[in-house]
Length: 438
Ligand code: PMP
Image 1 (cartoon, rainbow, N blue to C red):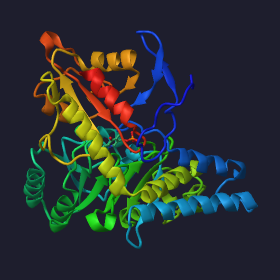
Image 2 (image 1 turned 45 degrees about the horizontal axis):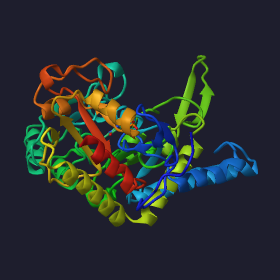
Image 3 (image 1 turned 60 degrees about the vertical axis):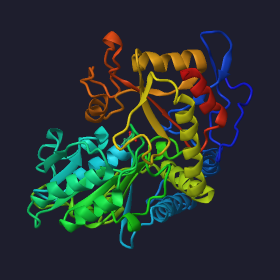
């Protein structure tokens, strides 16, 4: 139901859904507390309004001569420019609209030069761990990449040293790519992206930043971090589902065949005398955007980029740090709660915290938070099975699917609970969470 509005105290930017009420098993109902921003953040009201404002002007991009088609084309290409500004891209960088971070990284994987070496920490989300040289991509460009999985570091400095050691052994003349996340979707911890980029470049490798968790919470400057590509998802950046971005160097993308074959990606198609067809593909972003693009998705992402820039990341970061403090201090004297971290409990992080509760299976704990308190969190292994195994120091059961929880015999937790928040989170949601856990 959408009854009385929930208090929205001190949320820097209004989001949708704060007036949704949910029933409790204990009777009555309560305003839903969405504390799962790391999975999908609620869309900003401003983004929703911008999308609605465009709705009457629906037209197909790039192809139609009609006025509304031209308007759509402008909207789409302006969105590209807005995203390039948001990411502080270099001249000549390309912004390709995709479906998601997963899609963006698979696109880059399909554009790797022949014989590319890929270096990736085992701690990555599956979206950045699995696309490289995967058997599923046999025969495709990039599918013969040799992938080196690096052990989980226990400090940012160790991350850089681990990468440097791995890169030192490689042939500096061959192509190589490092893939690293900017902020962990499990621990929220910030990774030393600038230092990792410097290490990669010193050894002739390139680097792609998985900014799915970083971009909604911290400014990302391609120029300043000196990364070659960056990927993020609209639905984690306060825009609706279905749109993502891959931005960065144009050369590998231009040299690769189109990610999808079809209209929009092809410049000319001619029938040959022998009966086959010759295709000349576009060279710009359109090369990898075959089919009718998600104009509304791109527009929504651009709107979210503008809203975050206008709100100011300093304020957004300060707010998240305050909420992290409320959770940590509120649970500091609960010995059964253990937070998960690679770099230490006080390491800088975005508004993402995972923890285990002694004697509880994470999925049961999360279900209780939902049923008894109307709080939505995530439980399981968070599509980062190797990382969560390392953090739990055991061998969690895996039932196969992304968030698969294990059993908790004898009180040992084999899966974790994750609470995450951001721009629209009111004080009351986090305070209720702390009360509920206690
Ligand atoms: N990388 C990280 C760090 C993530 O947290 C996620 C989403 N949980 C992804 C990649 C994949 O994003 P998407 O599901 O939008 O493709």
